[in-house]
Length: 317
Ligand SMILES: [Zn+2]
Image (tube, rainbow, N blue to C red; front, side, top):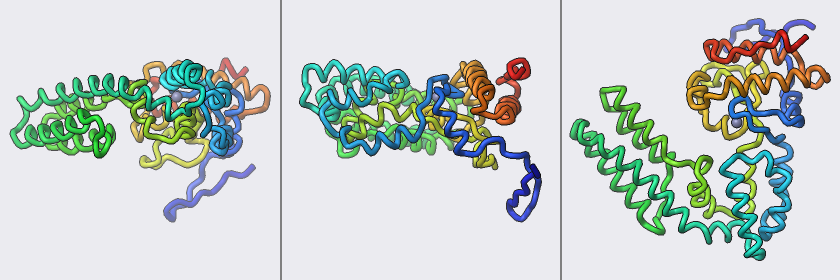
């Protein structure tokens, strides 16, 4: 087959043949592929879309539990814990839906969450002692406002981790010392997310419709195409630059380089090896292509400065 000519910004250049179409790559997810980063088994997106159309997810908890049970195995840890909580609550309250059950549990989880959050805000407040007056004042103002939200049982607007981090980023960008800037941001990033703490999941989801709560239990496990070289760094939009990753890991990476992703997920090199081995076993059944796996291994090695070093030659034989 001839090589494709790709036009980009009026420059023509030759690129390598694309080993798999998007559809072929997506369909690998029919074969219990583990996530490249966290190693958890992923769900085919079409199965998730079908579930989204299922009206019964709005119903009473025992029925929804029955519908979700086949996916319990692939649920991420926090979601699985919440699912188990639903299972025991549904025995006692079989007529309630998922939202009603979460509302019952909201208060106790909210207290636990506020405890973690206020500890983190205190840690950030300590920096006021060593920062220039103007920045210290801005931090004080933000923390007072935030404490007001988290200590009010029914705040006008619920606390948003994303907005808080955005605001603190803006404030610390004026700090000269990069070390202090990073220290404060690292502390702020420890604020619990609904994907990392049961209490944050319960508080966030108690505001949602019952069918959305049900879907949120499996959403992190849905397989996605991760751009190995992020789009903003001119990464391509095809399988030469795509790896299969779960929604959770894809969303957590943002546009950071792979080296940063490995820092946050120290088992990623091992998990990448496990995914590649699974893909090679599919190549042997003609369900995947060696060119894709070879390219994946090489790209991972290049982009991680050799930290992800997958030996595939012996596996291909
Ligand atoms: Zn993952």
